[in-house]
Image 1 (spheres, rainbow, N blue to C red):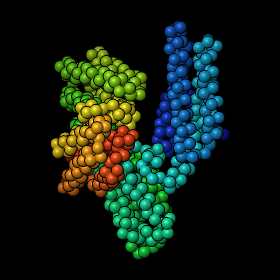
Image 2 (spheres, helix red, strand yellow):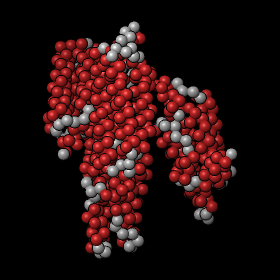
Image 3 (tube, rainbow, N blue to C red):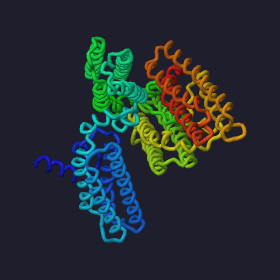
Image 4 (cartoon, rainbow, N blue to C red):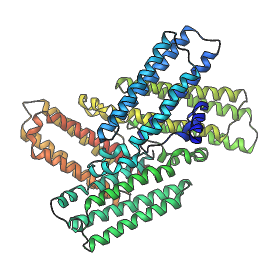
Amino acid sequence: MKEENWTRWIVQTARSWNDISEVIKQTGIEKIDNDHKILIESALELNRLIEAFESDNVNLAMIKKEAAFLEKVYNIWNKHLQREEALIKKFGLKNLGKQKDQHRKFLTLLDTFINDFKSGRLWVSVNLKMSVLEWVVNHINTIDYETFCLDNWMPIVVENATTWEDVTDLINSTTLHMLDDQHKDLIDLTLTINPLIDRWDSGEKTVINSEDGAALIKRIEQYAVSHFQHEEEFIAKNGIAGIERQKFEHEKFVDSLLLLEKKTLAGEELNPRQIKIDIMVWWIEHINKIDMDTFKLESWTGVFLSDTDSWANLADIVRTTGVDKLDEEHKELILLTLKFNKIIDEVAQTEITQELRDAGLLILDELYQFSKNHFEGEIEFIKKNNIPGLAKQETAHKYFLDMLLEMQEDIRSKRIVFSPRIKSKIIGWWNDHINYTDYETFKLENWAEGLFKSATKFEEVAPIIKQIKIDPFDDDHKDLVVLTFNLCELLSNNTNATTYNISKILVDIHGLSVAHFHREEAYMTKNEIVGREAHQDKHKTFLADLQNYIKKPESLNSDDGENFKLWMFNWWIDHINEVDYHTFRVDANV
């Protein structure tokens, strides 16, 4: 009862997420938990309405504006509840009927509130806020937690998983792209146990003791060791807490793999299905609990952002969107903010002078103009490519520009002085905006398929292909995309689309891919870059899939031609932007 009273008091008095977060249960599913935070914040926005309607400034324009806000809240909720139901269906989770019933009742309640408000029958009050917020908190902490708590259903999903896409909803992102990429590689590598499971099921009970089984366990162990070294170096380099805990967990996992290797060599009969489940569950729990606790940005980037003085220190924590022009501008905006370092250092050593104040205002004005132009370019790109998320971007852009104008005014009036907090606030906003809002808006899988279908030449897709800044690699990437367009042009011309001509271009794509992959792998070996084996696996998978088309070139005269084009573009652009870029770009910059 005491716990219930405490929760109710928190809900009644909360005005922000930080006020209420301690009483909200976390399911462990990042998408669900992030949605819950957004829903709570939208409910807390009713505080603003209450204050507005308690003032003497209520008019028809305000009522219309707030009615539009309530409809926006309804749409946010409706989309989230649909996502919940889709996730339940996808993974066969329990409580679908119960969830649908509660969702329907709540949306009906909200709809009634909105209609009553529009017609003047409902005044926004604390009771309205409590009705909405109490339902939300109770729903999250009871039925949502029971339905989505990761521990309740992860083993079932893991056992049946065959690809990364089958488990991606279960795995949280650290937002550190190199670590996230390596986590994906490790999951992909573990899933290559599946063919061994098929052999076990068909009666080969010593499959894990075979050369294939022993080699696979060894590769998982070797990549895990490389990944752990990278994590520990990153922790040490950035002064992040928790290195002893990480080392302990890492050593324990590696020891378990070494013991598994010994058992395979000793000829013990081991079930590869159980090995897969054990390794996958360990990885998911380690990423979602230990890694998220260690690497979540808000726990360590405060001082880091204040002290940082170069892009090299920030490159690891700023996500790439997949649109090279936007990513380069993000880098320029952060470099522009770092210009404050010189002024901040001088202010720390002496009193602020008008000259220093003017220099700081000049940087703020330059940052304002660059940001304004960057935002206009983003909005134009969103509209041109019909990308979802326009309203969210426009709101965020306005907030940042208003913040810069307010800073300028406060500095002119001497209400604030230059300090590391100004730089930290600006870079912190950019880091959050790029890693979440921009990343979700511009990631290619959300919108690029339409571009792939309509494009007829390299120049049309060039803006979304990242430059690695290693000329032979960038040249290869361009040539492979051009070859794909050549094949598409051939297929659109029925007269020339003979099996021979199709086969010739497919063989050219295969030959260039093999040569290109050899160059990349040799570069990784020479420069001792982490993840060579996982990178090589991606190359092998692509070549095997390509061989299927080479064996049946006549299939490309049918609808398979369009599928081939989409497959090529999706694979290559994802591989270049997400794998090659993060593998080679940093090394090239150094």
